[in-house]
Amino acid sequence: MSTQIPRPPTPSDDAVAQALARVRAALAELSPSVLELEDESHRHEGHGGHRPGQLTHLRVRIVAQAFLGQSRLARHRLVNGLLADEIARGLHALAIEAKAPGE
Image (tube, rainbow, N blue to C red; front, side):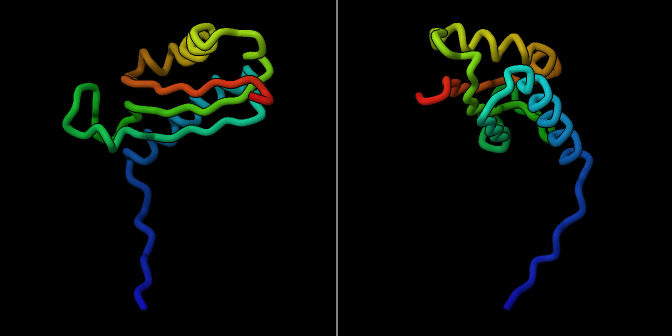
């Protein structure tokens, strides 16, 4: 039986956690009923835009009343607008799944 000892957080873990917290706070403006953030940065090592220890590739799954009656493009523009500061900080790729309740 092996026991894994958790490793202490590294500065890069802190940077990613802080970036995810900023993203969560920005998207809270939409009062989502569902908000899932998935850091996919590690999947892009060696590719353009990847920077070790940084949040560079993110998948967002969000359900919010604010998307009701909006096109997919309008939903993506809204999310991109709310995350403009994070994009300016180096978020390189953003995959968005934005739905209204019941979709």
